[in-house]
Length: 110
Image 1 (cartoon, helix red, strand yellow):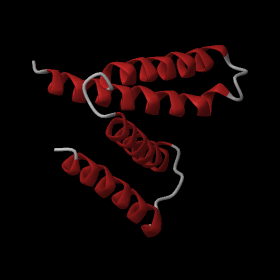
Image 2 (cartoon, rainbow, N blue to C red):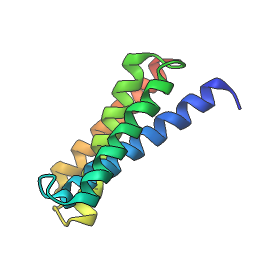
Image 3 (cartoon, one colour):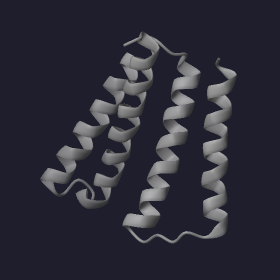
């Protein structure tokens, strides 16, 4: 496996860990529930650790932009589906813009 492939896989895993940690926040109830609080802390720690590995192989700006954009879009999408937070046309258009921005950043880095 090439270092570039490895970097993209660790970035994807970092995004997933960050999203899972954010979703666990909903259940932690202000860090008053032990298991969800531990899930939040471990997911965020894992996300940062994976990001630290990723930036050894990819540009920091590109990595963070993709991590933040993909994490935001995925968290919003899962919130709409999982927590029934509504899915207005404007919200979906915003998600589409985030995805297009991440694609543009990825293409411009090549």
